Every structure is written in C-alpha cells, then in structure tokens.
Image 1 (cartoon, rainbow, N blue to C red):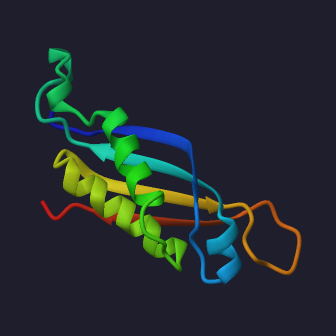
Image 2 (cartoon, rainbow, N blue to C red):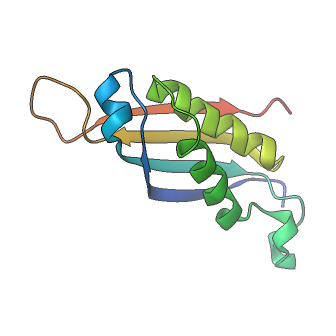
Length: 124
C-alpha cells in the first residue's frame, strides 16, 4: 500500500490542571482530546501485522501521559506537544491533528467549551 489511512481517537477524557489562573491549578477539570492521525503503514495492511501500523492503545497512553503530566498554561501548547510526541513515537504518522476541548474555560459568558486544533506534519 503506497497511500495512507486515518486513525481517529475521539473524545479521550482526562482530568488535569492546565490553564493560566491559579484556580485552574487548584481545582482541575476534565479535558477532551481528539487525535486524527494520518498513517503511512510500514507494510501492506493485508499482512494484518500490528508492527506496520499505529497501535491506538499505545497512542492513547501517549496522550494520557502528556495531558496528565506537567501543567501547561496554554491548551495550544499542550495540543502541539501531543501531536509532536505521537509523531515521535510512531514514525508511520505523517500528519497528526489534535483537537483539545476545555469545557470549563474561565470566560465571562455561557459556552459549551473552548476548543483548539493544531496540526503537526512529519519531516519525512
């Protein structure tokens, strides 16, 4: 297979303490991550071999480790770190689009969530 395929991990939920305000660090909140990964398999998909593709269980753990790790002030920076870490872990990823939602953003108004999306393209 010369082309690519896409894996989507949708609405991965994690409790963390990202944000600029002190209260966000004290209280914490849930963050939701979508990862859309464009993958160029290392071998033909017909071979049914896990090592050719991205193990999405491992990908979830990479996301979890970053989101629940050190505090980020900006969800944009957090999303980019997720994208870069996934691309570093899996050389088969040619593009990682990460969407991160923060439902309890400190905004003086009514909204469902604040969301950012970033894309990282592999250098190869």
